[in-house]
Amino acid sequence: MKFDLSNKPLKEIDADLEIIIVIDKNLDHRFVKDKKLLKKSGFNAAHEETCLLADKKRLYVGSESIKSTDIRPAIAVAIRSLSGTTFKHARIASYMSHPKCTAVLRAMVEGISLGAYTFDSYKSEKKKRKLKQITLSMEEYHDYDLDLESCGRAVLNGQIAANATNYTREIVNTTPDDCYPEVMASLALDLAEENGLECSILKTKRLKKENMNALLAVARASRHKPRVIHLAHKPKKPKAIVSIIGKGLTYDSGGLSLKPAEYMVTMKADKSGGSAVLGILKAVSEMDLPIEVHGFIGAVENMIGGDAYKPDDVLVAKNGKTIEVRNTDAEGRLVLADVLCYAQQEVEADYLFDMATLTGACVVGLGHYTSGVMGQNSAIVDRVLNAGNKISGEMTNRLEFNRYLGKTLKSDVADMSNISNTRYGGAITAGMFLSEFIDKKNREKWAHIDIAGPAFVEHAWGENPSGASGAGVRLMLRLLEKLSRGEAH
Ligand code: BES
Ligand code: ZN
Ligand code: ZN
Image (tube, rainbow, N blue to C red; front, side, top):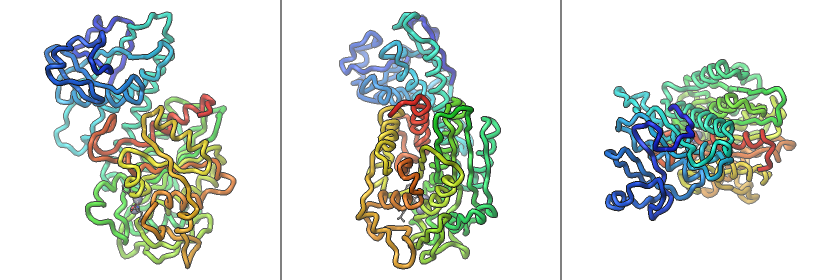
């Protein structure tokens, strides 16, 4: 999609479609020119409701408010509703609430690019998107009021954020037969080469040397060998060092504790955390943020076979802790345990985040659209929640540690069990399991983000298409942008 900013009045911009966002439920706004017709066709300007008046070349969409977290999904839904039409170039007012505030401008650009994404790699007939160009009019403001440079930057950053999200979506949507650990590693190498990142790939021999035995056990039954990927963006004078660890299960069959058939479908999306790490590093390098960012991905396939790891096995993780395997489907935490240890060994970071489609329990608790966030330092958890709910538009909720739930991970034969002995609170016990692999000195620097709910949803919602959403990319990017500006939250 091509974006331009124009200081011409909206109506003077030559385009074959106008998109109008309607906030007022009475349809009273100077941009609304078809009030009677809209009322007749039953348009109420409800949030994300659209009405295309094709003859008039106007598309209306309702939005709850002028806030960026409402505008972003509304405009995305409007763009999605245009699939199958032949409009090529749309004009839109900028809807900036203030000449100096570019938040809505960026949200619009993000919403448009995110809404235009479709996954058709496996379709023999591809629908070509006709809409190619968007012109945003800044007519409400005089040139001298506007900081055109920051407006331009908002558009560019919006494009970078959305493109990185779409890149992550594409990886997650790719089938397990086409995207396995080696492929993830080659994607990382390609990204590193294109964007000037450092990249190292750890193969089996090195993983053994590093004592990453929990990860290796999970990987053992697959014909696809595991990879640990380390990508780094290293600016000259970094304001902070951040490590982000992603769960990259290119397929999760459950292992010998096999998933029932209907729960196995969509488990290609168990690489969403790792794929988000790739997207984050892409965006961070394109924005050239003054933050040193390290991405670590545990890329593994969890399969069955004669060589599979078993319930009853005891694994020794990289930090020497022993883990009784009681369910091979709780594999993400085993992989992350080792990668978290490796990340802390390699980099002395100021902040440590992990992102994972870790538990079905998180989806049960928070629903499909919301990530669960845990951490011992509430200020860091607040940063994540804020970057999600208030800025990027990714919904997040806090999950609290609980000492009684912690006890349910006890094992009679090893230091801990890989599953809890209670059916309830599974998202929290999984996060508490991970906390056992955070060094004492890093406890206050870490937050865990369970993206199992939003990472892959089989229907479109807001700015997200059916399938992979790219969860975690925009959230983490906003958090890193804030850190790079030295802002507290
Ligand atoms: N990858 C799954 C979690 C998951 C479930 C992600 C649904 C997305 C949607 C994870 O590896 C898993 O299977 N977890 C088990 C843990 C249980 C065995 C303690 C779960 O949540 O059922
Ligand atoms: Zn699993
Ligand atoms: Zn899994």
